Structures are given as structure tokens and as C-alpha cells.
Image (tube, rainbow, N blue to C red; front, side, top):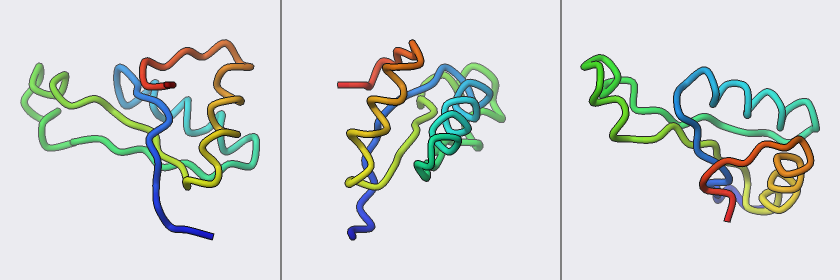
Length: 78
């Protein structure tokens, strides 16, 4: 098992990111939300850096399948 994390999705904001993480975790896939909270303190600057969802490399394909099956279409699903 590797500790490398792979980005599987981006979200428009922290709320959407939390929902995507919850969806993945409900399917047994550990997911982490990466957000630049410091940038969000300054209002619109928070839009510069996307909220990203990352999983372990070995879980990436399963995570993408879960997101696709649930009609979730994050921009970074490639």
C-alpha cells in the first residue's frame, strides 16, 4: 500500500467538497479535502485555488467510478 495521494475531483467551494468526500467515504473510500482557507478569508481570492478531493493512489479508479455512477461530474475527473 502506498501513501501517495491522487486528486480525483475539484469542487466549487468547501461545501461541495465536503459532499464529495462524504459520498466517497459512504462507499468505503477514504478521501481528503484540500482547501486554502487562508485565501478564502479574503473573499474572492478563495476562488483562485480550487477545493480538491484526493484519495490514495490505489483507490483513485474506484473513487472516479463512484463519482461517475452518482452523476457527479467534477472538472478534474480525467
